[in-house]
Length: 76
Image (tube, rainbow, N blue to C red):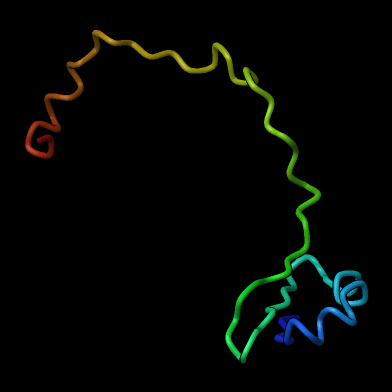
């Protein structure tokens, strides 16, 4: 569901609008018939990022430039 509603109308029905949001719904708030904001559902599946979670998963070899020879035409 995508609904467009004025800020004035939304202020009287805010709780109702928020509780009616589905996972893919959005509500566009307008002022003077121009969109000014969107109300979207939160994404409960996203978890906070944990620093260091991928530590030691990526190894960068600084002296391995041989493979770059094939890309010389594309490099500045």
